[in-house]
Image (cartoon, rainbow, N blue to C red; front, side, top):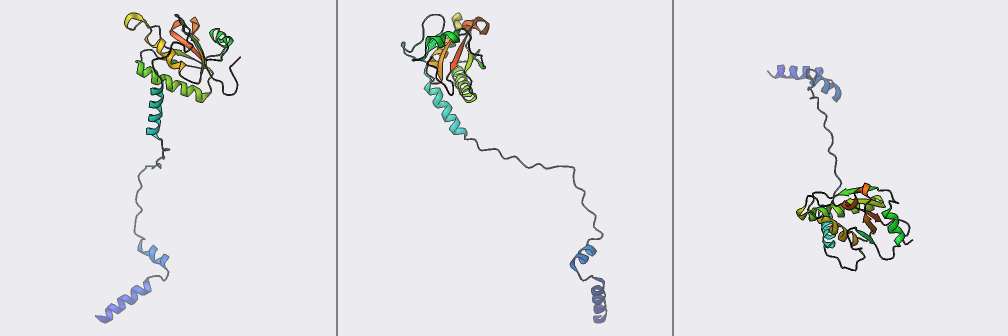
Amino acid sequence: MKKSLQNLLGHQAKKCPADDNALFRDAVQDVAPLILPNKIEHPRKRRKPIPHHHLLDERQALQDSLSDHISADAGLETGEELSYARDGISKQILRKLRRGHWVLQDQLDLHGMTTAEARAALITFLSHCDKRGHRCVRIIHGKGLRSKNREPVLKQKVANWLMQRDEIVAFCQALPADGGSGAVVVLLKSHGRSDRN
């Protein structure tokens, strides 16, 4: 028995190749490759971290900073037609605004919004305009035809909110073709030159 085991081991030793690669090929010669599924796995895109709580805090601070109450001597001309120019702004600027001197670069429609929704939308819109460098925009507050007592609820509120914003130079009622008494045209600060003339 010992002799046959030695013969067998000797026979195996002679049969096995000396190098590892040949040994591996010999061991896997009868193996069939696996069939891979027709799937491509895409790597997940990593999103940039967004400071959600910080942005919410900033938005809330802006909303809280716009009051519905404004003093009577704030510079708003009284009467049916809204008209306002910040202190130190010449009447010529307001006249040009009334005549449509600047091209409207964007607009915000507040129809159907509650006061809180309109205030939030206005804040977001003005921030967007400032980032894009818009100079003249239109805000549609509506004529109040569908509101209680058929009065424009948002008209005076929009005027009050606009007067509280530093980037607002002037605003006035839109031309009839641009919405008339249902909208205001707003002139924002220019990034680079003075509006005193």
